[in-house]
Amino acid sequence: MVIIGCIADTHDHMDAIEAAVKRFNSEKVALVLHAGDYVSPFVTTPFEKLKVKLIGVFGNNEAEKQLIKNRFEKIGAEIRGKFAELTVENRRIAIFHGENAELLDIIIQSKLFDVVVTGHTHYAKIEKIDGILVVNPGEASGWLTGKKTIALVDLSKLEAEIIEL
Image (cartoon, rainbow, N blue to C red; front, side, top):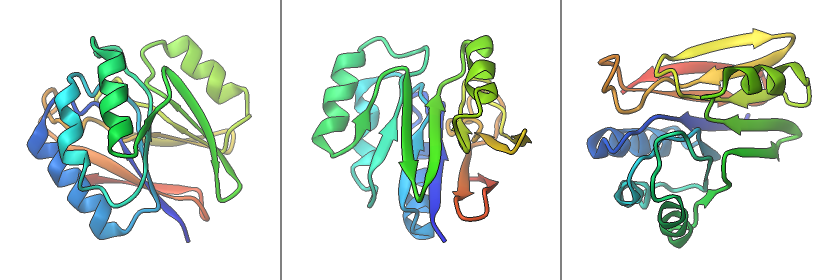
């Protein structure tokens, strides 16, 4: 059983990021995927305590992309740009922030992926679309909804759950 952690829309909320990192570490996730909107370069600091690799993409609110990418690289994390694809435990995974709903739909409808991790809406949502697990962990920051959420994905079962921090 391989569990990965999903997070999005951290929006500079340092306490929420620290809580998410603690939860990911306590759940012993194998990997953390970040679907964007870190916002400022200083958000890398609480991620330093993460015990596994983080792979992420940019959202629509990062102004200093290269500095954010460089700071994440210094802690062993990887920010791949606007889109990332990877394979974990023979499951193809796509990460895309989701600000372009039409492009997100195309990614899902391509049926190239087993899991699509997205963000942007700030609302947590898990759904299966034609057998593809689509996970929006909601907003870790809690700024818009008042709920700080992340998600855990069980790759062996292709199931996910939303965790409120």
